[in-house]
Every structure is written in C-alpha cells, then in structure tokens.
Length: 363
Image 1 (cartoon, helix red, strand yellow):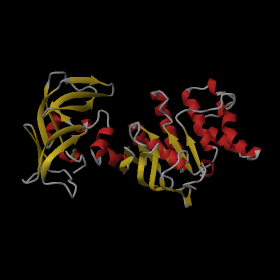
Image 2: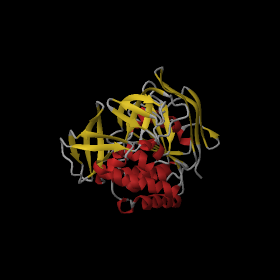
Image 3: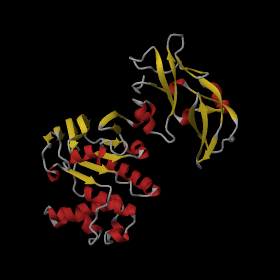
Image 4: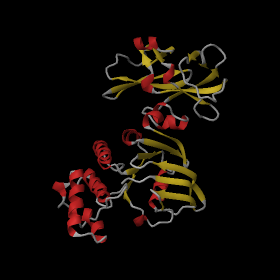
C-alpha cells in the first residue's frame, strides 16, 4: 500500500550553512511528485533527508503514520535510484537484482518471483545473464530501477536517474517510468533539473530555489500560471518573454504601457491583492504570440521586425524586439517568414502573466 510522506519544519544545514529551513511538504499516497530546480536549490538535499542519508538540523519527517526522522534508511520502507547506476560489475543482471533480497534472507522461491516480475516489467528478461559491461546506458538504468522494484516498497525515490543518458534514451525511459508508476501506484519522489521530465512525469511539481519551494502545483498550473518570475523563467524552451512597463487599472480596461505599445488586458485574471498601478512585467510564452493573419484576433497587437529565424525541424523560433526587450515567437515549421521581415504580432490577454517588478510575484 502506498504511503503518504510529510515533512514538518524540516531544516538541513551543511557546516553551519542553512540549505533548507523550515520546509513543510505533504506528498499524497500514490502521488508522483517531482522536485524541480537548478543545481544547488536543495532538491537532492530534500530527497536525501527523506531517505535518511543526511542529518537534519530540525523538524520532522513521517512516512505513513510512522515518524522516521531518526530511523535508519534501511528501516524506512523506501527504495532509491541514483544518478549513477552503481551496479556490481562482477554480477550479471539477475545477481544485481537479487543481491539485496539474498542479504535480507528471503527464500529462494521469493527471490525468483520478485526478480522475474521486475525483469518482465522493465523488459530485462533477455538480459538476465549479461553483466553490466555488456549493457547500454539505458539498460543499466533499467537494472538500477529494477533493484528498487524487487524490494516491494511503498515509496520510491529517484535522484536525477536519466541525466547520464542521451536524449533518445531519456525519452524512452521517461515513458517507462511513468507507465511503471501507473501500474504500481506507489508514492514516488523524483528529482530533476530537466523541465521536460518534470512536466511529463509529475502529478505535481515543486519548483525550488534556495531551499524554498517557490510553487507546488500540477504541471499545467505551474507552466501556465507561474507564481513568480523565477518559476516562469525556469520552465519553457525558449523561456517566457518578459516586457517591463507601467501598469494602470484606472481606466475601463486595465493595461500595461511598454514604450510606445499599449498592452490592454481585458481578460487577464488579476490576483485579489494586485495593485492598481505601478511598475510591472508582462510575461508571455513564445508559443502564445500570434503572427501574420492570426495576430488580428489578439487583444495586444504590434508590428515587429524578425531579427533571427531558427529552424528546429518540427517548429520554428523567430526572434524580435518589443519595447526594447528581446522576444521569442514559437511557431510552425513551414512559416513563410524570413529575417528582416516586418510582420503583425500579438497575443491574447488571458495568456499573459503579470509580475510585480519589485517582488517579482504574480499579480
């Protein structure tokens, strides 16, 4: 049965320097939670604290109804997959999968049953007698995941398991990990700095910066309604465009004036505490900027010059400027636009995100 994970006022420090301070987090039983953020943001430290691999400075960790704050890692009922495969080179795949079960003293028939089940789930049956040196990177990572599966635990922890693989292998294993979670239904906490992994795998994403969770929500909310400018800039490729200007809500239609462009926002959903006026930043995703004939149905419209065209196979990225800010426009692959063209551009106001220029919080 899957178990809930909870941290209460969790604090971790290294050599007296706080890394995580007073963090409260609850992960539902059976949930797939992704901890996302740049290097040094505290995501792996949080994962290791849940696993019991780092000492905490304060707070409490519980798994299910058990307080495991000071419980040994082996007694927490968890399995962990690391960035490095850490396979035993002298053992074949079967031996690697069975090793922990043999150490635990399980009967031979139970070991056989668990290893075969994991091998079937991960497509390892034809590879059981191969040694790690005869496996590809993706196959080795499957074995590493299999070692966590055979333990039959309610909580699985993944620490950037795909970062050593090439793009094709990452895509393949991403699908397998998601399907595996759907079949097993165990509670999963997954650490990554890769936004594609986060958006495609997670039930919820916790975006972290400086040991603090900036936003905790489902992937669609995090992507389309970011809580602050950091979250908005961290997700998306190219990242969200930001245009600074002056907010005014005194007229019949609220808007932001940026240079000589008046961006009227009749359908923007302001936060309840949003200011009536002041310096603000308009954020708009590159794929939400319309061009040519489509721009005619946008709330915010202007004419821009294309300064660069990037052809990416399945899509094209055009670069331009708006009120002195460099902007990216993501569009279809065969768009008939070239560098130097002046074309209509625009976006729908409900697609925008507004941020206070001083606090960088969504308004």
